[in-house]
Length: 138
Image (cartoon, helix red, strand yellow):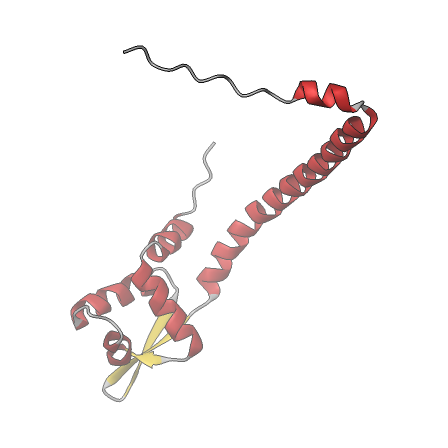
């Protein structure tokens, strides 16, 4: 059965765009007005506002009025949910890769032992001789 979480779909969908990821990176350092954010991009103000709406619907940012400006700040709660989801996979793959690393180390040691025990003449037989190149018949 497929596990479905619409909130995560919205978060990952909003993070799929490089401009939105860059906006998040900028506002993670400090709160910024919409105008300050738009200044960094060659996009129109309306396009930047649409990106901010997508991020807000995903719960990744929040906006509040300060005088005439809208101030944008990061809302890390949705990012935490995405991180928790990915953490399960990170632990799974770290465990599998760790076991693979151990297996490769053991196998490498066994190969080295085998080569040390075999006489030099048998090692020469293991090497493949280059095939003679046939000249094309014209």
